[in-house]
Length: 235
Image (cartoon, rainbow, N blue to C red; front, side, top):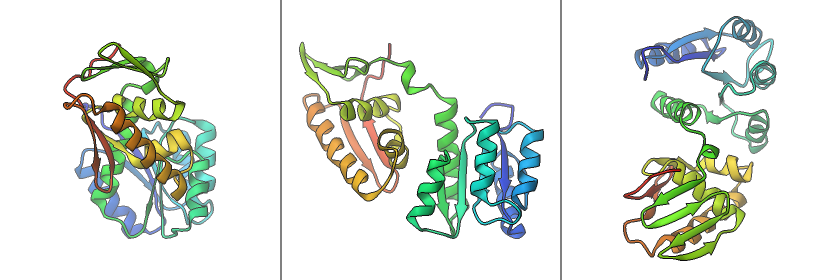
């Protein structure tokens, strides 16, 4: 983390929980503003610049979804994490349609919230995937634009989904690619059927990459996948 603190807007109507979360995140080096309702949260957002927002869904005066819509109208790029006691799929989908980056159902651990925040900040502040066109993955050369994978002079044409998924893996080579992020980026919706579809594509990519024993895609339980490669050069 740089000397300039990451600034977070936290809106949570449970004052005790809000204060606990604020104190915890402050001990981790973040600057946190806490508001107890959506209208106060919106006013605060208009007066300050934030790197990330954490909104409870069920709040008085303006709920988290309405607040997120208003915030996104002012800054479409600001990441948002929703906190909610609800776990219905419809609510989760509504949050993602509004542009949410992640979603935590109560009760949750503060460590889990910290992990989600840090992961989002790495994505936002890191290199954008689209900036890189060609990756060297071990002995493979992957051209994301042409959707080709070259190994020892042999070129294989990838499908669009294969190429998009490999692009995300290569962009975070030797680091975790979060499962939910990949689903939302490529399939838009992280429902059961799309999750199963992504598993199929991971299997396909493993078969394509098995020619180089130093390259592998491994599962990180409960989090996502990691592309292991000795070479991560980019062009």
